[in-house]
Image 1 (spheres, helix red, strand yellow):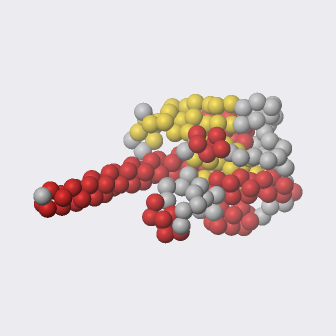
Image 2: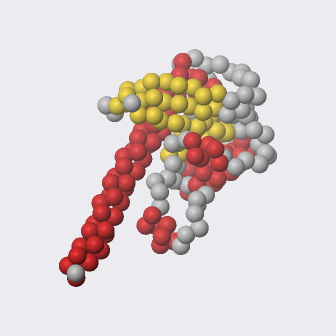
Image 3: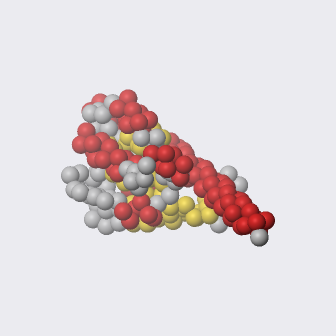
Length: 210
């Protein structure tokens, strides 16, 4: 069984827990205690594979708090970054999270990065509370641009009103993670073959010269 680890991040009151519980139980609960973190588990069958999905929902952080995401970056295979379309400050916080995830993890030269760059984490930016369009502070185009500029998927929805859309959103990011798993395996296999070929060429030539 494949393990898939997903972190749902965002500012306080954006609906991270509501989205997660909506996906897991199909129920909508509007209020959650924000002073503790949770890891939810769910077994899925997707693309012919049995998956053990773990969803990390951290306790809410103040929007202006400093954060490193070090443990999340090491733990998670993908990220759902949530903001509230009726709260511009939550969008600024989501933007900072996206920038942190997409931050270069090495200081190597550009050509080295292009050659050895690891497969990027799957990221889905979500504008939640679409049912509050009448008090919207963040335009759809702004979310779409942030996602495009940082190689993320993007959607707007309402955890309160759209059960199916929430499910499809989670399936979408999980499929991106599975695609990344395949790319990593392909690169690992290709790298092993290249190393074996290099070793064979070096030592093969040495044998011939003896």
